[in-house]
Length: 454
Ligand SMILES: [Zn+2]
Image (cartoon, rainbow, N blue to C red):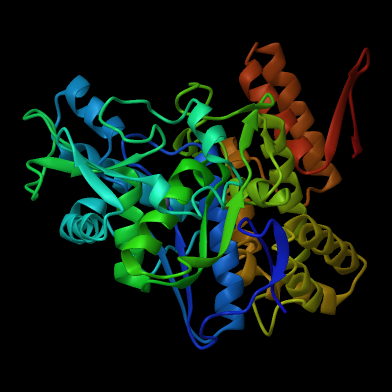
């Protein structure tokens, strides 16, 4: 039985699908004005892992992840860089998809763009006006939160708390300070679409309400995203969708992943303390980044450091060593499945992976095979060991990363000593790191360099 922590009830619940022959899941996708950072990558990997599990358990899964390609951050970029909307978003979407694929994500079944669903958004806004949940004021269409008694139930906030919160924009055209924009006017120099309320653009929240309805219907199983989306984005999605669709639920289970911190501060573009995925991919394999992102429980905060990626790389190498020359042949390990079904408990999955690896290293062929068989459900260890070691980023200067013989280790130490004499510290350091990555520690002393296994 799959168990999921539901943000709506604040409890771990048994997952009961609406239709067990077809599971439907929606995850909020990127706003495409810049490259994604490691904080943006976390939901991609977390929900990809969940979808892999759902696809294993159920006959059909439809996974929708949108692309927000109309947004004020995008407009700011267009004005400052003097480029067209299409130039900016097509390049950013391309980079995004490349980064996402590098992280071994399978990709959603539908990846709708907001700009291609403006008419669906206009229709939904018209419905909300007709039903008196929304009103027109100074060229804006706003949602009246006082008309929806359940408003605040996802984020567990009272109206007062929401209003005093800094994220609610106070404006003179609102009836209640917490009312949010469904449609707003666009000046001539920024993207806009004709609507019954003049040339304008949709608010961010209505995009997801309109697109989830089109691809998944008025009610679906799981809605996911980062914890920073709970309020106001998801709260507003629920309000719009339930009021427009006359339904008592948008998604039955709401799942949110924790923040990625850097030096214990939330990584974000606005704080400018982010590390982009493309930058990391110059130094690490995408699979290493995926491993790092799955190491912690998805709801817990995750602290990023270069060292954590180096450690992830070492751990993955040790797993790859245990599955050499094996290919997938059978179902995943049962204990790994059980841990995934327990609210995607990847830390426990990882300790099981390393347990199996230890058993494999002691000679258990069965453990090695179970390890390899678990690769498709995790999106890890899917490469061949040969290829993993050959293409590892620490494999520069033809340093072999395979199990080294004593002779090879001594040769590498000699190469490093020569590099140091020639003041090529970069190469010397690269050799030391590469050996370290294979579990070999170098110790410099007065007589030269000793080595030992970690
Ligand atoms: Zn969304």
